[in-house]
Length: 149
Image (cartoon, rainbow, N blue to C red):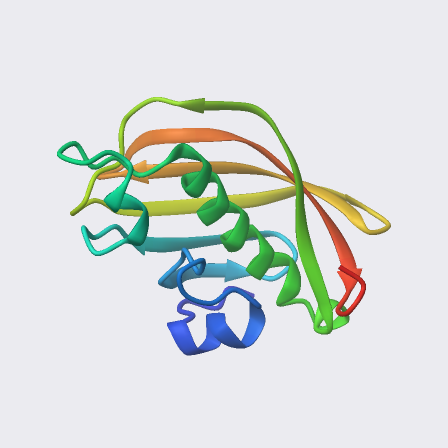
């Protein structure tokens, strides 16, 4: 079953992230334990643009990856059996950045979970702007009980 929209309040109820490190604004699609799609509105007000780069603002690639990881975390943490857990980002494979992300862009973030064994999992991730892929690759994560991170 697909849950069409997750507003910011619902995201805040699932993820532990808060400003300035919450990097997803809304989910547009969710199949718990399978996939999630969301949006990140990139504005000049983001704190990282003060130093990356003055006069040429570009969203750091590592934060694009973190945005994707947060969307993937909602997909796994929205499952009832994972309600009291944290999804920790443990690695990336074959990640490619194809285009810069700048203020005014809207990142479309899609993560499909491709494997889970015990408390370890992985997913395929794509970030797009205007339907064009700007970054893609594989994300790895571990599930842990809250308080054990």
